Length: 294
Image 1 (spheres, rainbow, N blue to C red):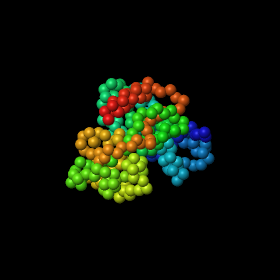
Image 2: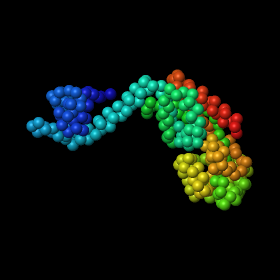
Image 3: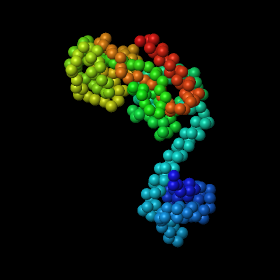
Image 4: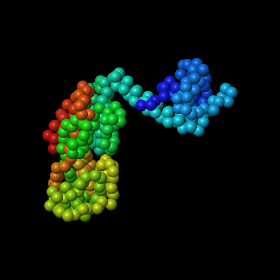
């Protein structure tokens, strides 16, 4: 990696941000001449002028302005990563990536129990629809939903899921459809679940229902259902609590198993930390309790 000296980059970034050599020197706790020397050394390293010198005034060149912005972004990222790492060494910490729908409807309602059992542990949840990468930050584990055949990660099955159709209790003035065919005649809401699986379990083949309202996030779709916009096919795991509270109603007994499962994953070849082991053990206990309640 061809990198210029870090001290020179810091001096140049400080000058570009503060506008004066003496202010940069004050911030960096060095002399006025040391800042000037570092910037000149950086220019020699790059082979181009970053500043224009006019008596005691230094002004950025066009290349200097662009380079200063890019350097600031890079140094800021390094500082952020370093702070996260230092915080992790000061206090037991675990960072987990979780799907927004799973986090909101399944994990968060149960999290009081985990925090009460492990008050010393700092848990950081990254809620994202993206496929979490362990190469892009200090991520300890992720809860993923899918086939479980991902490269470069160790996978442990957490739980399966099922598909069911739901609506608000007062949808259509309380006259709720109770057959598969009647469901298909309602305004349908769609996120990511596969209607053919549910229709196959209902004995209906060859139909591909069209949903006039689509969502990229299941949580948003369930809120639309709760507000009476239509009926939706969803996962039992994220609708169960809403059904238990009476905010949603399961419309039929048709509930086939989902082809995907939830997994907890961490980098292949790495030993789980003590914090990850605590979370994993707790999750398995919560899953058992949940499945026994169904």
